[in-house]
Image 1 (tube, rainbow, N blue to C red):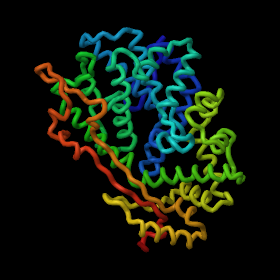
Image 2 (image 1 turned 180 degrees about the horizontal axis):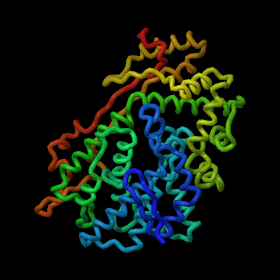
Image 3 (image 1 turned 90 degrees about the vertical axis):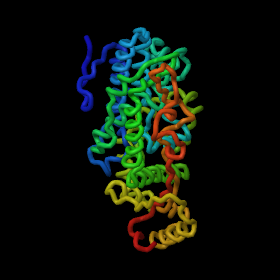
Image 4 (image 1 turned 90 degrees about the horizontal axis):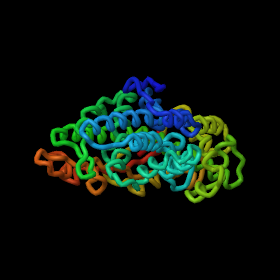
Length: 408
């Protein structure tokens, strides 16, 4: 009997295979219910409390629709391949840590969520008697049909189609709303290449514009940047204190990750480390931050209190780098104000670079199938994406306490 889930964005999602249902009900996947899709963006967009769980289901639903559409165009996708595609996209984000991208390389050291996702898939493969072999090959770009990988991970994959539609819906930023059905209906496969038929070029342009607008209005919104970097600094400070043997509150689940700088090798070789990682979610981090508001360490307590009470750092963004003299001047003010060292003041005064590339011509390209049956890159037929310089936007930001905003 098929299981049905009522999704806020697409309506009814039918789980057509028992393996899919079993994977969704496994504790590794259920953990995604407790990880927000957009980190701390809900401090700016109050409605954006949706989770990685919803996003994974939505991506799988779009994969179902794409498979059905391609089969109608006489593209041969076997039942086994179809199940593997749905499984690969369902589990593509299972390796995300608390607050998604915000803490991706803070809790663990330089490990992308994709690598952890693969480790989860390999472990689930053992649990489910190697039924995930084909899905893992697709996810790892090892399957013979390369367009399968493009459906899972590319500049026009089911992941991006869902998160733009979903994030736009929950934030209320209408500029991110895209015509998902139109894009899927324009998809085809020629010579093992995923292509978009020529009449769908404008839909792809709108999709890329929507993604760019969502980056600058949501994902790289200046207040989101401030909040998420404060969160990163809180975890960095907690880690430093624990590793210096300073006693601070921690939940049993988080403590090992504060004590150790785990690497990818550790995740592969330490037997229960992945299960320990499974216990980490947004709730775990919030529990600690609430307790850290009363910590003896000035930096940890102040930053934690600022996050809990949404008293975020002031942030300025500009096209040029901020002068080192200005940064030193603000840092010195923070030192005097809070009676802390230069290093400690750097938790409150810092600058970094942010950038977004609308269309990466050097990566997996978006192929357009012309009416003449010739396949060309999007840049050959688009008036908006034919210049590399127009695709890349780079900016710099400076964060510092709001109480200094009139002094500089």
